[in-house]
Image (cartoon, rainbow, N blue to C red):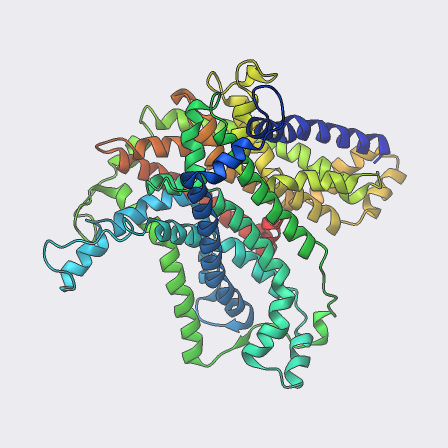
Length: 564
């Protein structure tokens, strides 16, 4: 395709990111570091770091992200090694179920966890039943340990991201390298630490970076646990006086700096690190059969982890089907009324319609822009195309909470983008936010498709008289359609259940997306918790079907979408 088209894509993308990525970030920096007289100041940052409440929130957020990432790694790495190296009963089924935790936002799963581990929840009822807890005695498992409750919920929800990257990295290792180490006497765990782990470290760090940033800026789960000693919740509560209080700006700036620093560290350490592999055909690689006892032990490991991971989902499902659930192991009575109410409630029907509209338009934007960017990066020789790739991937480093706050700041009355003020109608800003946040997934998928498709096919079509654009549309796009469908489905599914942008930008009930409706319903007295859970189950079914389709289309390549 012509250089003029590549330059046009470059210019449009640069303009789009300047307006809806760079500018919101600059508004955050301006609010946190520019005083009323327009002069640079670090007074707000200094006061923030001297305030024990804000400093404690930053410390808790960092420790929470470290804990969630560490727990997710401890869960994901053994599972990835077992599934890559061994054959065991129900391997394919359990390998598919590993993806189940991804079909529900962590904060919705927190509703189920609270129901199971609450003071009058299922676990205490079970302990009463077996006589391990005195009659009338209760333990509120997470009330005194909210921090670890949030960390566990997030780890169980996000570990598949590390698992997918680890499986993909292990699949790329030439077995001959490990066999050579074994022949030299390096066996067992020593071989794993010395040979295997260094080879898969880039994949682990890539997945771990995504999990860390996600957990560091997670808003919904701390809100459900009523844990306000983290930066994300402090920012959320600070939105009420965004025009007069500089501290939320400074908080967001610190969160942004931490996330970008981690992203830069990931790219610097592992972005270009590769290990030359010989063809796998040179060695007898592949998973091997185990003795019956060890094989069933692997199945038990997978099954146990999967059960723990889907426990929040099971809790949400049981709440959704129950009329009341108080002080018993499982609900005594069940009903389908909650599901009917979830599809007929004044709050939920518009929310479902809003999410469908916002997600559909944003996915269309992502597909058009993502394909154009991927083509320029992979196919063209235009100067600066690597900058274009960097811009497209940058939203992975900037949390949704930060961008949403930036959009809110830049659209205040008196600002250039005041006509987008979400207090009147957040539709355009939500579509833009969803598009920017999910664009990297589409670019990654499309770029992989272009890299796997020979350019000679387009050249042959052009030699037969087809214009360059027509050659791409008629020849290349059909060949990479599976990649585009996968990236588009992922962008659509996660836009449907986007949390931070939805909670911050949707401020009028008429424009609530699904996730904002779930949070509002959960906070209602009466049957709000049950309707919220039913709506969560509908969302779970939708995203579950999407993830199943993605795994069928991409298989082990699915992990490549979740890389920084």
